[in-house]
Image (cartoon, rainbow, N blue to C red; front, side, top):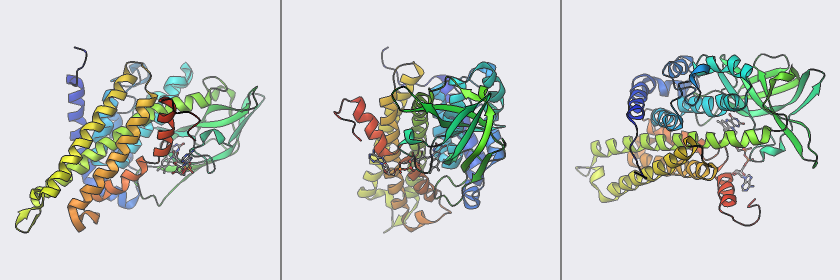
Length: 389
Ligand SMILES: Cc1cc2nc3c(=O)[nH]c(=O)nc-3n(C[C@H](O)[C@H](O)[C@H](O)COP(=O)(O)OP(=O)(O)OC[C@H]3O[C@@H](n4cnc5c(N)ncnc54)[C@H](O)[C@@H]3O)c2cc1C
């Protein structure tokens, strides 16, 4: 059979298990954590106990090796309930664990991965800088090799999972010299939290993902051994692009799962809430809204799962990952908006979880490449002339 839309028994069991965990353990405390802007060590460890960190990592390094589609299903189920916990998981896996697993040497993998996969520690991916966001190649953070050590100077901003007590290491993208054509040579270097000269400051006041950890990082003559280089010197830009391809699948999963959650809340509410002596869902205009939401979610799922299938089968998937990330994020935007609309005034109150969906959605249009950047990536892949910039 050339086309098969069935999930395996293991994938269905995983969905059920993660759904159960999210409903029983995340849902009751998600709003309180959001109100207090509190990162949850307990939930992070629980996600580790359930094997949700390191789903693409082989068992010898502590991973569960269940594959990309399973990872995406798990992320979707957590995002259905809460964007913050999904962010901790998605960034922990796609941005934290993945570069170490795919580009680290044996010693680096053995040193870092077991605790990261157990949810006992977190690693972060330091790419964005105050003046280098979408234009990630314009990084100013520099690392110079002095005898046996990299000396790092610069700063990073908006780095997920970088300043919690269990944040253990950051993969820092730095300029390590000039290549022959005069362009910046970019490399990735592992910088353990707590290294002298590395200051990690928590950022507060986010509208989105309030219970996820975000930090600003400062490097001042920060020295790490030259062995902390990840992969080969000068490969950092390629490593970053490949890491973001995988990350886009997980952001897509957050959009899909979040939209599913918002839709279910809206469907339930539209059956319960009566106006003019009728459930509001029975007005055709509202029934059509729900029908459109369900259709968009189905479309997004097909697009995202196809991109994951390509990834899992080691085929090129950059274009599909960009399409899935962009579509799932923008679809979540539309669905969350209509879900709040169906809740009327109550949808604007924090005691209704649809309010959190409405806020959390916005990050997905911006993080790991804005929607505009995804369109640039797609335009290049489909052969649009020029640089599309
Ligand atoms: C909560 C949170 C968590 C994050 N986690 C991480 C993390 O873990 N690691 C990390 O490295 N980064 C992280 N980021 C940073 C995120 O990836 C960046 O915010 C994002 O890439 C956009 O960069 P910018 O904010 O500098 O916006 P800018 O690049 O300044 O963009 C501003 C606007 O200009 C548009 N624009 C820019 N260039 C073009 C162009 N060529 N054509 C058309 N439009 C353009 C953008 O689309 C956007 O609308 C996080 C951000 C947030 C808010």
